[in-house]
Amino acid sequence: MKIGNTVESLASYFKEFPKSKVIFLVGAGISTSCGIPDFRSPETGLYHNLSKLKLPFAEAVFDIDFYEENPEPFYTLAKELYPGNFKPSKFHYMMKLFQDKKRLERIYTQNIDTLERLAGIRSELIVEAHGSFADNHCISCGEEYPQEVFKSRLEECSKIDGKFDYAACVKCQSFIKPKIVFFGEDLPKRFFDTWAQDLETMQQSSKNGSEVVVIVAGTSLAVYPFASLPTEVPNTVVRGLMNKNTVGDFSKHPRKSDFLLTGDLDELATELMEHLGWSKEFNDLIVT
Ligand code: OAD
Image 1 (tube, rainbow, N blue to C red):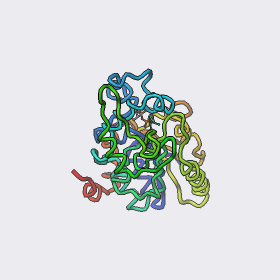
Image 2 (image 1 turned 180 degrees about the vertical axis):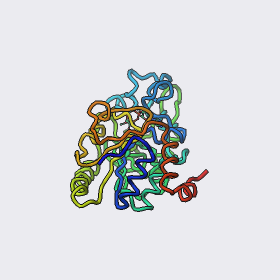
Image 3 (image 1 turned 135 degrees about the horizontal axis):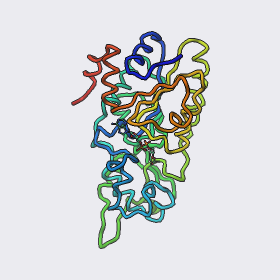
Image 4 (image 1 turned 180 degrees about the horizontal axis):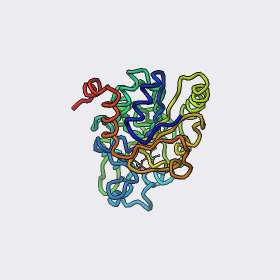
């Protein structure tokens, strides 16, 4: 099976195989149009704009060892990035429409912005590989805190007499941390369990004609183990990349069956909806 490198040919594939379903593997690029910077884009990416946090290296802001020594940069950034201030993008709503059309198998997201949930995608179809701000706990005693409690503590975080007053646990005074996966921490068990299950579905799909397509979008595929998922997709399953640039396994080990749709994700999503004849429902979903 070969899908060409145009949105039109992807739409033709979905029409030709009406039972086919998509597994999306996504990253920060699907949320940049919402006003949330991605991490590695030159000039605009978060890691290029953290000088105010005075970090020894950019990724330290999400490094567990660094955080335990100096939590201030993370809380400063978390205030800025906290979910609630942003709306889903067209790309999110496109994925929601795949769900409504019963064509969505799963979304694996590296994003912690919870915009997939906000777009109305059901939680069982979303795997938040790097966790989210939804659950919070004390890193020392493990006390769990609801999202609202952490959010209000975060809002109170401030510098008093040069000392940073971080979100502290009421029981042991250690730090309350959202269950975002930091460098040096394990990914949630659900990530591994669901991927094993979906690999099985992919293997079966080519045998029973139900067809699964894997679409990677808005990620540099720079962070493992997430970046290894496209490599693990069985050869019998078609993979595609929707992104500004070609990344990861799509440039290092391209497969003959891969398709590449290069460009802006919201524009590609809009075009795909047009070719599928889904524009009316798509536009109805988009909250302006
Ligand atoms: P990156 O910033 O590494 O990659 C974002 C990708 O999206 C880049 O290839 C951009 O070119 C592309 N992109 C951005 N905006 C786009 C647009 N409007 N249209 C098309 N493409 C666009 O972000 P991730 O790959 O998600 O982890 O980063 C992975 C992980 O690194 C994050 O989850 C985070 C970070 O460290 C943790 O914090 C644990």
